Amino acid sequence: MKNFRTTYGWVVVIFVITGIYIISCTKDDQVLDTAQPVNSLTDLVSIKTSSPPAIDGVIDASWENSPKLQFNTKVPEVTGDIFRGYVDNIIPSVSLRSVYDNDNIYFLAEWVDPTESLARQPWYFEPSTKKWAQESANFTFSASGAVTRAPFYEDKIALLWNINNSVSGWNNGTCYKSCHTGLPLTDGASRHFTNFPTEKIDMWHWKSVRGGVNGGFQFDDQYQDNTYPNGRKGDPGNDVYANNSQSLVIMESSPPVSLTVPKYVIPEKNNYGWILTSEVTAGTAKLVTAVSAAGVLTLSDGTKIDPNIGTDYQRSGAKVGPKAIPGITVNSYTESRGNITCKASFTGSGWILEFKRALKTTDNVYDIDFSTLADQYFGFAIFENAQIAHSIKANLILKFKK
Image 1: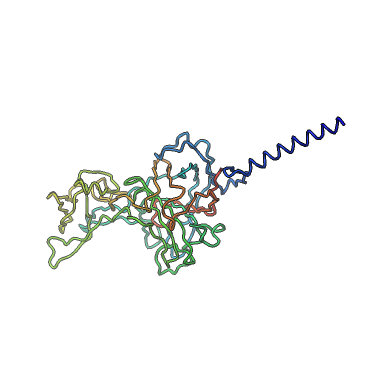
Image 2 (image 1 turned 45 degrees about the vertical axis):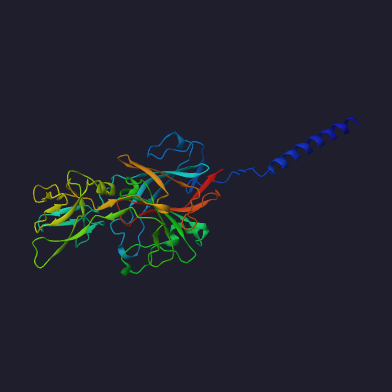
């Protein structure tokens, strides 16, 4: 009888404990965090935080508990010879980290880069022709195929995300699902487009010179659809930059002969890669109003720039002189196009880039929604001083640790 009572008592205790457990697990606010497998080669694990990082380009303590996803990227070969000079280039060390809070997701990207490329197609003066010209965005080759001059462009990165799971086969291909291979040679450029009208890709494009290290410190938030051959477009909002160029008639020419020349210049400034629109508005940057047959520029305040005096406006070996004029003016992205904020710093051997975006933005058409905390497959690319050619890492996965 005693043994029966003891056994009965234990049964009652077990029953009560089991009931409490079941009740607790069925509460509406209960979160079950089942450990998910992590592949160290592909998975970027985002950790929830109550102390998010400051977006300042400095790696602070808030990143200490975030695991690094480390990999390398390589430039593939595509049709049309448009990656010429870059094919097979490898970025040997790239790392990504991520955290999130109730409102935003944050990323930290680090990658090796021996050169800080911020001279994007600057203007220089060619004394032999007495004309102004811009450096090329691409490699220049001799007739034998040897490189004669390196490109003058900017450093960039890009991330591609599947909007509303609309892209068929995305998890097995990511960025290859809008790949620009197989296009006709006559296309002349590397294009991205999806395969069906229902498919859209969210493209986050950090451009160092065009807003990434200046202006509004923003990514260019873009998207891709199935418009052939170029489905890459900006989200709603204004673009950040304009080419710093214009056409003027040579003053002495008869009949009139037009030349393309810089539009704005900051005469007293050296070694600058862009002109801010705020500098134009403030009058710091001067409008070029006339050009002579000798290449002398007349400015809006009546002063002149004579590039024939000294060599500061001319090429200087593989580089350009200190007075070379920037190829662009820069402003800030607006609306949905500017909803990814960032800050970058160059260490001397590579880039540190912090950036953040709302888990769910107000743009339900062109932005990916992270608020469900579901796994998201993505592709990553680095443009090392490149207009189009990029080294890539496909089939990465963002996972949220709940």
